[in-house]
Length: 236
Image (cartoon, rainbow, N blue to C red; front, side, top):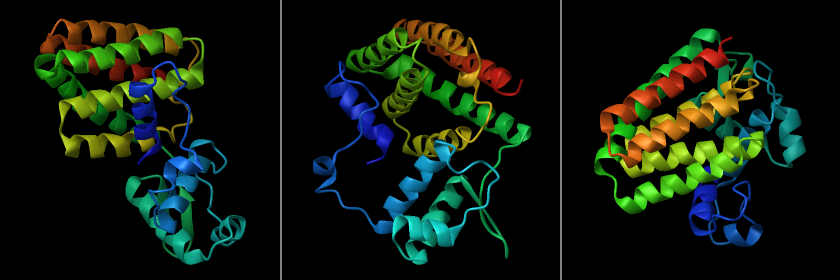
C-alpha cells in the first residue's frame, strides 16, 4: 500500500487523527514487500525530503553501504524510480535525481489540469452523496490546516487522490500518481510560494461547491483554473 493510500484510509476511518501518520511495524507485518520495493520507497522519501537533491548523482556504492544491502536490489529500485520519472539513468555515468526544467513543470501541470478537471466533472455528475461527503470532510480538514503547510500539503494530496478514486478510471489514477511524484521534484512547487496556500484553499472551496451543486462543467473549469494558477505560482 502506498503511503498516501494508507493516509487516506486513516483519514476516512479516523478523521480526527493527523494525516501524517505512517504504518507501524505491526501494520506492515502481514504485507511483506520485495526488498527492492522497500529500497525504492526509502529512495523516494530521501528525494522528496531533498536529502538527494534534484540533479545530484546517486552514489550506489555509498547508498548500498548505508542501507546494508547489496547493489542488486538498489539497482532494481533505481529502475522503478526511473520509470516513475524520479531518477534519470545516464549511459556510463550512472543514476541522477531528475531535475525539472521550466518546460517539464509546464507539461506536468498541463496534464494534471486536463486529467483532474475531467475527473472532477465525472465526480460532480455521478458520485454518490457518501462520496461527496468524503470529499467535504477532506476539504474541511484543509480549511483547518491553512496555517500548517506540511499538513495542508498532505491533505491536499489526499483530496485529489480521493477525487480520482471516486471518478474510477484506474489508468488515469496511475498516470496522475506518477505525475504528482514528479511534481514534487520542482524546487519551486506552487504550494511553497508565500500566500499560495490561502489561494489554493479558496480554489478548493469553489471546486467543492461545484461538486456539491452537481455542476460538472463548472467543476471541470474550476479544477483546470486551479492547476493553471498552480503553474503560474510554480514558474515565477
